[in-house]
Length: 222
Image 1 (tube, rainbow, N blue to C red):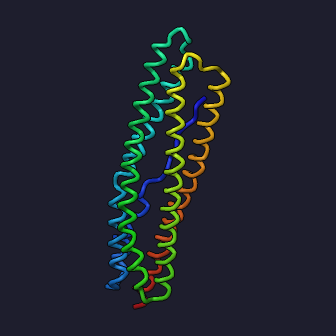
Image 2: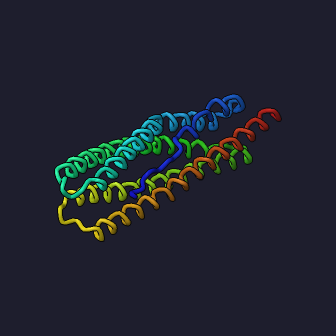
Image 3: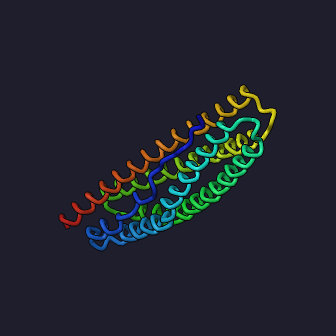
């Protein structure tokens, strides 16, 4: 059975920090600017969740088409070819949505440069430490996404090879099994990277909350 699926947490982890920090920043300009830049980062990832839904929808469609192709006898080559073409069209759509998702993340990265700059300007030692932890967490999350993106691209390419191969009348069981093994191995890597990305997203949430608590404490002591 051909396995797919990747479930990753959208950029909403960044949302909300503006409101949280604004309540306790006490007019500290670099911190205020940092939170504003982080809000813009979140806004740039707005399409992230939408693209996740689209990708998963096409993955499910292709799994169903693949199942039908495997169940169809070799005597119905036209049917298999038609199903394969549908699967290939679905894979093309997935590529489009993946590109939109990647563009969204790249736009978010551009805003991140401002976040780093403002974090470096923070004077208070404790607040600066938490801000730097948040920055490092964001960097790890971006790096994780880049790796996930590369693995998903590879898996998508293997899918397309498989769908094309299923059109061939001379495709034997051993070759099909080998190609299927390659596809499943690719998606195993995708799921592994998805898990890492989700962990970094959770970690970012934790650092975000730690930064907020530090700011709140500083505000109360001032």
